[in-house]
Length: 77
Image 1 (cartoon, one colour):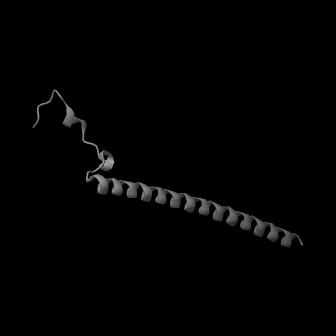
Image 2 (image 1 turned 90 degrees about the vertical axis):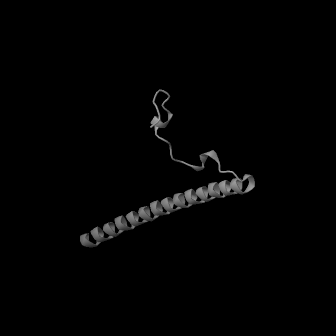
Image 3 (image 1 turned 90 degrees about the horizontal axis):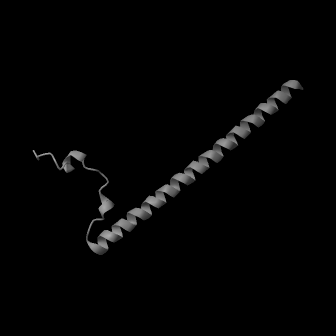
């Protein structure tokens, strides 16, 4: 009787853990899908802007030049 009780408690705990894990995975999957859709919308908007104007937006290039390119007192090499 005691062994059966322990076994059923262990099964309940396992079922609770699995339920929690599935819920967390679903939340993460939904968040990832939302981010992907948001990026697709932004990309589509940028593409529309480029098609409409023929110019690249200023935010198109995400890299930054090192600060020594803008040094006023330095002589260019």
